[in-house]
Image 1 (cartoon, rainbow, N blue to C red):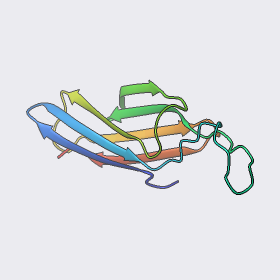
Image 2: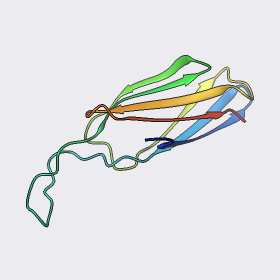
Image 3: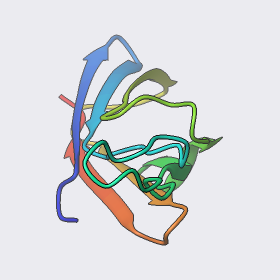
Length: 104
């Protein structure tokens, strides 16, 4: 999935305030399809890694309890205008979502 993560990183002093929205189904594996009655297979983000200029600033493990199209927010101290912030998320089926932006 290309650009499945939309990121905004605004500088406030030397702290970048980051907000990111991901497009993902986040299925728990417990719901049934109403039409067929079959269980919908689990598909959820397992790991999320955020980097600032290639250095890891967030490394999180997620599970099926996170909602569909999740939003995450965090702060990064020591950021400067123009720094590259990237986020990569991997789900339990091996699909990768990614996005990047520059700190403004």
